[in-house]
Amino acid sequence: MTTPVPPIACSRMYNLSPNITGLWDRLFAWISAQSGIGLQVIPHAAPAPLSTLWERPDMGAVFMCGFPFSLLAPEERPIPLAAPISLASWADGQPVYASHIVAARDTAFASSDLATARWGWTVRDSQSGYNAPREFVAALPNGDMVHDTVGPLLNPRGVIDALSSGKIDVGAIDAYAYQLLDMHEPDVIAPLRIVATTKPAPFPLLVAAKGQSPEIVEALRRALLGAHRSDEGRSILASLGLRAFAAPDIAQYDQLPVRARDTNRALGGSW
Image (cartoon, rainbow, N blue to C red; front, side, top):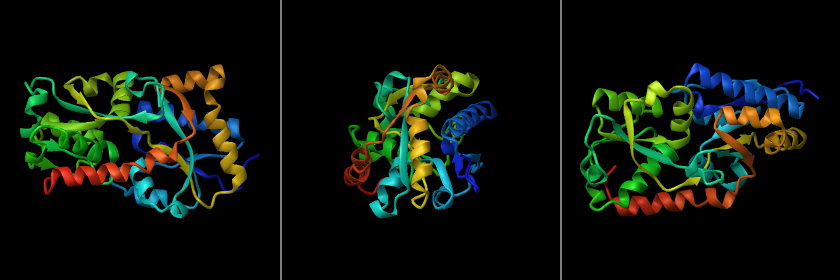
């Protein structure tokens, strides 16, 4: 079936280049065909506020960062559909991701230098670009000494540009975004090197509007969770560095605010 007013599908934070965006369009077109639900991809590029995207009543399959999802009361949350499983080794076959702490390739930064480095961050409600690097810094010896920070840099491209210009010494890039760039736009990350990788966190999940019809939700969820079961589906997923989609473990997302509060206590007034 095709709905009279199509729900929205948007790859959200992973539209890293026209080439990569085209691969997401291919995935959503395939999910639309498999589910029988008409999906319209709606661009929502930075600096457009993501909160307005997540409030749309016609969301069908939209990526949402786990941290803002976790801050909503259960009755206010959009409906979770699925979370990706990356093919990268840091995922270990689970629907998790991490952040790479990166520096310019021609610098001599080592892990021991990170407490005195000038750090860049993306936006304050980002797990990968803000909470993850702060959690990492909080675990460093003298991590509470980090006060020289630059942000908001909005997204991984902003972090890369700030590193290239010397505006920051180190920053965090969503490890899955880094994986996609390594696969499809290696020149973009060629000037960078990975200094460290943060603890894993639950992967940003695909959600539908809380008022979306149960029939649409079930059809989209079934198509996403079954995408890896066909040759064509596996090929499309592999082009995006993905193994499959999994049912989200909401209890893991609910731990993100706890982790953030622990980090706030450890860092005191820094950041």
